[in-house]
Image (cartoon, rainbow, N blue to C red):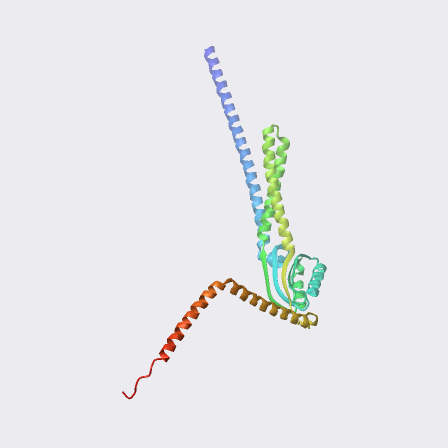
Length: 311
């Protein structure tokens, strides 16, 4: 009986310990799952917050109210203009335009002048950059300083979306760069260091390209490009050129040229006659014989006796 009771007690203790271990394992699993679930929820919430923040930023940029109230500050537009103008004096007008551009804070990109002669009207082109806020005032200045604007074309390219996208991409690349730098500090193996270094250089190269494009768009949207085709409205009147008349010299020249032509013709005739003398003698003899034959025939016809009319 004592042995049977002891066995029962041992079995009860075994069952109790097993139940305790099962409950502990279940609690650990539930804790692990709850921890993993909370981490996932935190990540999801971070992503949601980031996406909501980006949507809010885009909403601020694309909302009609913002467009109307702060269009000059938020919109990125590249303005270009092509002008065909006529001026009274080419040099004075170009100099005045350059002074105006310098006073507005702009600069000249290219300047060309075309002129065949000093007295002929000049033509040329002028390509300049002026601050975007001075764009309209400079166009008015050009119109006032010209005799006539024959053609004017103004275009604008809105690059706001591209600019915002580039800034977002640059921000994301900077975050990746910081993460790779932190990984490089913690890396222990040479292979890991080489792989992280390669990824880091690729990211930095992309950042440089994006930064270069952003700087280009900033410059293009900060300064408007204007190309002017300038022509001078001038009539060239030739003057008297007494110094170039030279009547006596031209007369002597013409006389000598005529004399030389006669001498050349006589020389050619002598050369032709002397060179072809045998042929000419044969032709002359043939012609003489033919002439004699014709003359003899005609004389024979004239010497025939007259017929007796009475008979």
